[in-house]
Each structure stands twice: as C-alpha cells, then as structure tokens.
Length: 243
Image 1: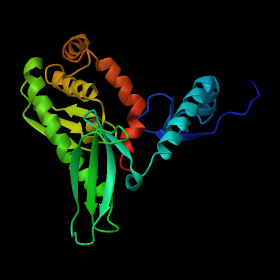
Image 2 (image 1 turned 90 degrees about the vertical axis):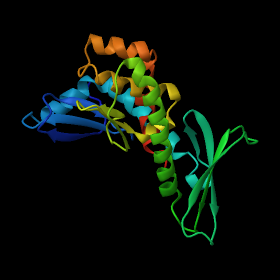
Image 3 (image 1 turned 90 degrees about the horizontal axis):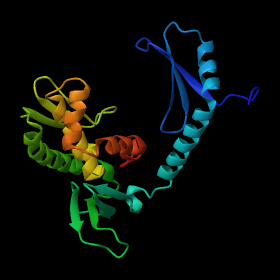
C-alpha cells in the first residue's frame, strides 16, 4: 500500500496528551491527538503505520452510524430497550393538553414488542424532552434499587447517589462515598447496569484498578468484562437514543 493516499483524518493538539494517539469517532472519522509540541509530521506517520487498523475501524463505525441514521424517529415508532424490556414509542398529540406526559404500557403488541411508551403532548411539542425526563426519573429508581441490593454484597455503604448525563463516563465514585451514574445505563441490558454499579461500589473499597479491585468487582459482577465490551460497542446508540 506504499504510495496510496492516506485515509482522511483530523489533527487536534492537546496540552494534556503525553504521546500521539489515533482514534475513530462514532461517526467514523479519524482523529490524531498530538501533544502540544509534537511535530506535525507525527500525525501522518501514525496514520500510515496504523492504516489497516484505521480502515477497519472507520468502516465499522460508519456502518454503525448508517444503522443509527436508518432508525425510525421518535414520532415514527422508535424502539427503546429499557432495563432489558423492549418498548416502542407512540406519540399522541392532544390539543387539550398544556403539558405532556409519558405512560408506560406493558403487554406484548402484535409486532412482538413487550412495552409501549405512550407520549401524550400538545401539538408541536418535543417528545424527546418528555421521554428524557421520564427516563431519568426511572433510572434513578432502578439504580437506587440496584445500589441498595449490591452494596451489602460488596461490603460498602454509599452516602449519596446522583443520576446525570455525563459525556464520557458511565459512573463515578468519590472518596466521600458519593456515587454518580449515567441515566442512559437504563437503556443497557440489566447485567451491564449491574456491572457498572459493582464497578463503582468496588471503588469505595479500592480507589485504583489494581488486582484487589478487579478481584472484588469480578466476584460480584462476573460478566464485567463482557459489559465493558458491550458499552464500547453500543455507546453511540445509547448517546443518540432520543435524537
């Protein structure tokens, strides 16, 4: 492949980067991150060295992006899996409503979906805002239940629980015993949500990722490695679930 044109890529400078690294975005774009003082030519050398890897991962990411773009919209019946239960979104516009509401209806429909999110809202309102609010509240309840069930097994007593929409983390734990989780874990299979909960609970006993930490985490979440792979493979879908 010597002499072939390099795949297109962008270059970013970072004062925090200690070495050059190559990444592929969720949209399938190649990005080279360079330390602030690294020579510009380093980017091309890195892309050339890893062009086979890069081509494979760009193609994979672009295919995933195309599949996401082909999904039905929320208004045309998008499917969401919530705590392991598949749901179809159904929009009902009602001129008499001042504020919308979400109703979770369970029961298999003719197409095999187990549940329905019936989003009732005034004409022209954004269903994503209503679903976001409902799902966050439901995620707080589910995560609270799982933390309460798993914390005694791990041997810890968390002090506080918050649910947010972090851009780069699925969960975190503070030295003071506070736990924080991404509400989008509700859209993952239950074993994945449990694995993230156990991961953060284990950090209340072991701050680092040393052997003792992983031994504890794998004892109470035996599928933790599988869950990490699942989150990497499905991150884009979770992030764009309501787009």
